[in-house]
Image (cartoon, rainbow, N blue to C red; front, side, top):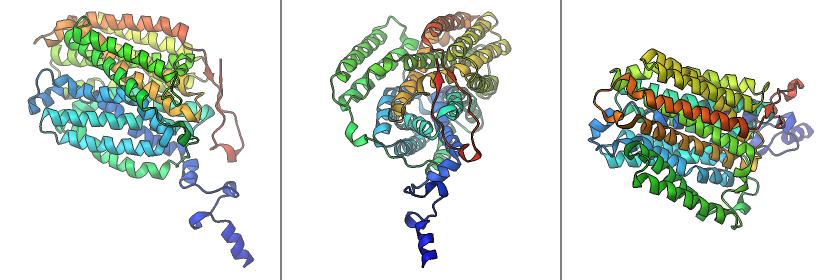
Length: 505
């Protein structure tokens, strides 16, 4: 009986054996697996996030085929790409707050399920309305999942290990945009445009099964008391949507058009009203003072600049290769492989350097490389040299992505990690729209000309180089000189245990 009693005490609810570390504490489902395999959880969440980022650019190369198959009008074609960006960026802050309130794992799975189902809807689309509805629902799923997934990573990793995890995560922002163009070209040429969307379905289903096994359920402290600020959510979503709409419209109608100016003015007015309301409500969606924190502001700016330069470069490069040099969709995708590799190398290199040098130095160096790469593409716009220049730019942009996430999230408390990640990712979507808008406006009417020459893109690449130089100057002043401390050696039993976050400067 005594032996049986000892064995019973050594087991938790449901007869699950408790480890030595777990005796005296309630057993939580999934806790042991998560402690053993935090990197497995990171890999699964990273694959899920990669799908979301891919879908920002994966349709770029497929747009001509999609338009022809569904008989899309000239005004409908751009919205196949931008409907997703509009909803994704516009609802990101709401998704971050919902993750903080109702649980990051729950929102991750709900968003992933919606994204997967709407991907199938896009693949089966028979007309413009069905496709645009599917793209909008994809954006909603992404807005729910993305901040929740990153907040989950923030709970699994702290201290120097968090910096390494953020290095992996931040690389997705750049490599996903790059691989989107590559994958879009390959799938469109070899399998048809519907597979640009259908490929998400089996991957999404597999992740819906695997993520609950690797990611633990974590209690949301104080969730019931914090509540949900619905008016704030409506205002910030409307303001962000108006801004993205205005930026998208620039490429078609220019900066001076009423359809461009009015949405941008409306966005500023709505954001101002949002800031005023958030200072007065009891349970605000966003503490406005958060935007005044130097680290958060710096990270948001770096994400805006880096994404704009990367996505804008793909936009120009894709047009140049297809319209001026008669590349096929597959050839364009393969031509962009060096840019994807450079983005990954830059992100990983930046993550390693953050333990040795300050974030300001990495951000300034990365944006300087971006300016140099754009200048090369402007000076020598032939295909091989242009891709080389954009690869140099991507190397610096990858490092800048790491700095953006690290500056914003390294010292985030668990209660606000979802909201901070939503802020950073919102500026990722705004950056993509802004980059395409600015560079399309610089390219001018040449984008709709039947036959183009390499020199037609010189002015647009020059504008990109100037934007990068301006970003260098701002980063030199705005980005704090923080540096991650390397992991300290510890006893073997503690090597898988998260350590306290630490940053200097």
